[in-house]
Structures are given as C-alpha cells and as structure tokens.
Image (tube, rainbow, N blue to C red; front, side, top):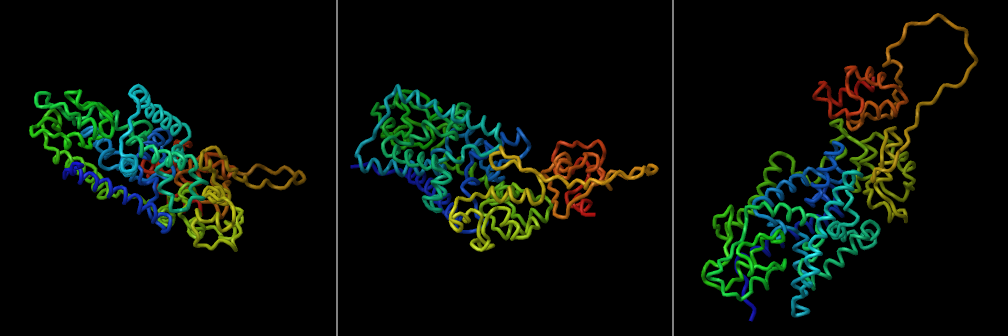
Amino acid sequence: MAKRLSRIQYLRRISLGIFLAGVTVLSILHQNLQNMPSIDSLDPFGGIETLFKYLAGGELIKKIMPANIVLLIAIVVLGIVLSRFFCGWICAFGALQGAFGWLGKKIFKRRFVVPAKLDRILRWVKYPVLAGIIYFTWTTGTLIIRPYDPLAAYGHLSAGLAAVWAEFAVGFILLILTLALSMLYERAFCKYVCPMGAVNAILGRISLFRIKRESKTCISCSKCDAVCPMNIDVSGADTISSPECIGCLECVTACPTKKATLVTTLAGKVWKSWKIVALGLAIYLGAMGIGALLGELDFIGPSLTSLAQSGSLAVEDIKGSSTWAMVADSFGIELERLYREAGVDGTKVPADTKLKDTGPLIGADFEADTVRIAVAKIIGVPYAGEDGSLAVPVAPAAAPATAAPAPVAPAAPSAPASSLLVVPADFVLEGTMTIRDVATALNATDAAVIAKLGLSADIAVDKPLRDMKDQYGYTMPDLKEKFAQ
C-alpha cells in the first residue's frame, strides 16, 4: 500500500498546480484577448537574457516586460537563500514534467534511472546551454531562446498546432521529447538541459539552505534516495549540498524514523520544514507584491496609444497582439497605406484584426515584424528587424532638379542650420533614436538636427534621445513640438 502524502507534499503539489494553471490560463487568454500577458512575459529566464542585452546596448529585448526583471530578482534572492526552491515549488514547466512523471509511474509501474556515469556527464550539459544563450543574446540582442523554448511552445498551443509549428517547430519537438522522457526519467529537462536550472544550481552553491542527515539515527532504508526526483544520494551524505537539490523536501517527508534524521537548516540552524516552505513562498510572492507596488510588475506593458501620448512610441513596440487599427492610429498612418506597404489585402483583413492573426486571413505566413518594417519605411526611421540583421532603408530627401547655372550673386548671410532642415510631415521623432539616426533619416547633418531641436552643441550624437533628457533638461514631447514647427 502506497504511503499517504504528507501535508507538506500536498502543499507542494498544490503550489505547483496553481502556478502551472496560472501560466496556462494566461497563455490561453493571450491568444484570444488583447492586453493579456504572453508566455514570454511570464518566463523569468527572459529577465536574464534582457539583462545582458541591456548591459550590451542599453535596451530591453523585444517581447520582454519589466515583470521579467522582477521575477528574476525574486529567483536570485530565492537561490541565495533557499537554493533551487523555485524549481521544486514554483516552476510551471517543472510542474508539467512532474505531472507526466506521475503518469509514467502509473503506466510503467516502475521508476527508470539513467546510468550513473552517463548521468554525471549529462548534468553538465545545462551549463554550456546557459553560456550559449547568454553569448548569443549579448551579440544579437534578441530573445534567442524563444524558437527553441519548449515552455514558449506550450504557451502557444491554444493558437493551434499549425501556428505552433510555424513559429516554434524546434521548441515543440523539445516539448514532446521532454514530456515523453519525463514519463520515464523524472525531470529530465530540469536535470540536464534547463538554463534556468543552471542559474539556480550556480546560486545553490552559495545558498544558506541545506538538508542535513543525522547518521546516528539513520536506519539506512534508502527511502530518501528512492523518492528524490533529482536522484541525489541523500543517504550517503551528512549534508546535502548538491546543486541539483530542488528543495522539494521529498526526502525529509519520506524518512520513516521518528527522530530528526533528516532536518532542514538555514545558515546552519535547524528550521522546521513548514517554515522553510513559508519563507520560500513569501520571498517569491513578496517580490511580486513589491514589484506591483512600484509599478514594475507589468506583464502586459503600456499600449501603443499610451506610448504615443507620452512621446516614447517606437516601431519596436508593435506586437503581435496589436491590431492594424491600433498601429495605424498610434503612428498617424493611413490604414490603407499601412496595408499596402505591408503587402496585405485590406479587404480580407478587418482593422480590428490582431497582427498575429493575419496569416490565416490572407492564406500565407505573416509576422508582426512585417508591419514594423512597413511602419519604419512609412515614417522614415531606421529599423534593424526582429533578429537585428535587417537594415530598413530610409528614403533620403529628394535632390533638387538640375538647372542651368545661374548668375553668381553676392553671398547672402548664412541661414541658421535649423532652417536648412526639412522635416517631412509624416516623420515621427522617437526617443529611441539618436541625433545621428535623425540626421541620417532626414539626409541632414548632426549640427542641423541639434539646431532644430535647440539642444546644446556638446550633446552626444550616438546616444538615444530619451537617455539624455534628464541631463539636458528636455522632454520628448518638447522635441517633437520643435520638429513640428
């Protein structure tokens, strides 16, 4: 007869279930409603990627929200205090693997274990995976893991298999393989591949949390080894300091001795297991609460309309959940022109259609980046594309027609540089643009742009305008008004 689960293990399964259900429901709503968070904004690993992108170029990765940073901070604090507690109690993908692991035990009536030598080698794979993701994120400035992320593929299943296959073919294959392997080997992805697991494992080496075994009262039944989902040799260690420990406390609750044989400690002092659990959940939920109070726990991000009103709207802000009408209105573009530039038959695509839903209506693959490129061309701003490899050409100002030489007249006083700058009516000044970007777009000199904006001559021409507003005392609406004059 199977041993009844302890209260702590019931609580762990409830916790994992709630987080998995939350991610699942929000992902489904994202596919059907506007202004709902995407799976990208719910993934704390995105915080690591965008952190390196920010350090490299001063910008956040597209698709990443401030919430990713909040979740990352929560996990870092958790990792230092309680090792891989996130993996064992909160991670939605870990919960999904656990559910399939339970199903596998029911079907196969046994627990499979990877041979020890192979297991030791495979445990190191997640570290090169983490290093590779960080390197390519740094160099490309994109969410490089996204097409290969099984969690991202899972989060888009409600959009239909065709849509998932078109955007996440590799991630979908990895999702199927992960869940199939989880039925045979518990948490195979967590052990061997997960980059977030690698981050937590690194933090776990300096963690204050440890499980200690009292050898004098241990009866060597090895039940702790049998229930450990990460296959740690619990019965052979006095202190479980393995970076693979996910703090699930399965070993502690499975120990049959009536004495304190396996105990949880924090900074060397014994803590009751339920206090450890309460502390872990409090750290994570508390970080989310603080983020919400500071206005940073925003899984959705500002709308195009609000960005336009604040003067910080950029082409990169266009998302798959944006509608055609929303894009046209926010950027001040005629809807018909937007359709035409994007190569879309407007009679087949209503204005309230989300960009990501355009493909089925026109009978072809369609990416939101096509609209970003179209908008960049229309308003005359440079844009590098979703993967950073595209250079959208900005049409230079038309050159005057060649005329016969005119009689030489006496030189007139030089006109101020600002008067030589011609700004097209549809040109939109963005906070993400540098003075050099504006000069290139308008086929003008840096000095002419500086004069037009009334800025100090010593201002940097290669920094985004929004990053210097506090230093030079201007606002983006002020600059836009000067450009409109």
